[in-house]
Length: 148
Image (spheres, rainbow, N blue to C red):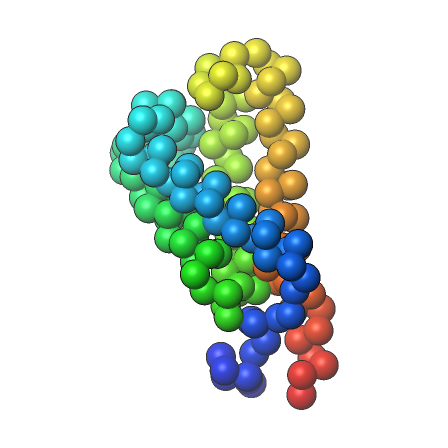
């Protein structure tokens, strides 16, 4: 088994991917800060009822995670592929909040119609793909056996 230094988390990416990685990082930073400050109430409203933790705690912890992930996308380019996978998994894990907003007809973030909330659901896979492409994570996974 390869150790961390032998793994290709520092996959070569095109400059456009770098730009998109940094833009995604900035957006995650913004979202994380908004979780902790001006949009906290709206994020609390999105926490599904079945989550076994206090809603505000979930929002604070997810905000902190978004800040860490956003910073990691920006300042850890050598680990970009690993960070890309972690960000993609994070986007999958928070998807139930978007589903909950749609199913429970929760108005937040200007999404005040069923149509708007439904359309938002289709953007989550785009975010997952963005994280994997911009960081070269999928490329690193695809080429993982070629490094031996």
